[in-house]
Amino acid sequence: MIKKNLPPATIVYTGDILVDTIIRTTYFNEKTLYVDEAPKDDEMFVKYIKINGFSDHHRIEKLLTAKGIDPLMIEDVFNVSQRSKIEIINDAIFIVMKTITYTNNVNNYDYVSFILVKDTVISINAKSENLFQSVLYRIENNTGIIRQKKAAYLLYTLIDTIIDKNMSAVKEIEDKLTVIEDLALDDELEDVNSVYALRKELNYLRNSLSAFFDVTSKQLLLSHSALTPDIIKYYYDVFDHVYKLGEQVNNGKESLRIIYEIQMNNTSMNMNKIMQTLTIFSAIFIPLSFLAGVFGMNFVEMPLLKFTGGFIVFSVLCLLTVVGMIIFFKKRDFY
Image 1 (cartoon, rainbow, N blue to C red):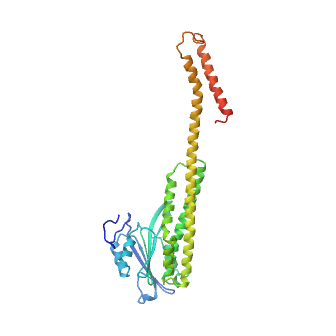
Image 2: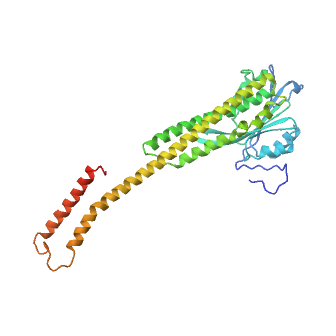
Image 3: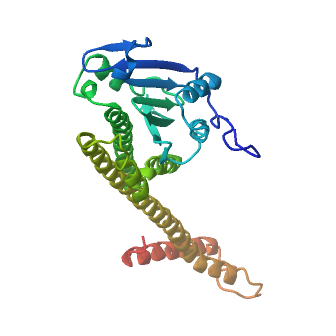
């Protein structure tokens, strides 16, 4: 769906696939964990609200409004076709990212938005329910330091998970490009559409992280009060991974350019071979046409016309001409 002629802060889901809404709330600190059950002293806990699917948009809107999220930010949550970005409104951090995951060699595009407000982190994604399963596992099993840190560290963990998935996607794309490049070098690449599909995926991944390449957005995020000195180093690590991912995407696009050039050269070479073959055939038949024209002239007296073996002599002459032309072209390395 496309938003058109609607006032600001109007909730419209712009995607094409509606997945059932599943909301899971996890409360945790270093010692205690609650799932979908609010503790009495919930201000002592970090809260992670995981929302998957946009089918029940009224429920999502009500939850976000109750958390004091700005209406414009709620509007952007449902606008899954927008660009990736980092915004801060009313001291709430809002981050939009996109990712590609592969299931049985089929790519799945997904839109993800994160909101950090006070001690609560909210993740909203359009399709994959298991997108942050690894993070939930770490929280539930108290693995690493995630339960020792505040909400800003949880936000970092979720962002890092998306970046890791995108890096895995780029690795898979690189493997496909290697195979395609080998096929192109051997002039055996038949499915050209696969090249354009990979180009689309690389552009999608590049655009999915565009906000992290923007200096202003980066400074805006790093200057937020929630990013304390013990946390901010992890965000610098995120930016480092983003730059690495950007280099991998650029390398992939360079490989696509090389494959395109190889394919164009192969097409040109094949066309040259066809033209070369046609030229050789044309050159062979030119003297044959000349001989046929001479012997087809309506002269009353002409050698061989009244000779009994004239046709045989003419046929042998044509055959010798063809053989002679082929030998001539072979010695000149025309083929």
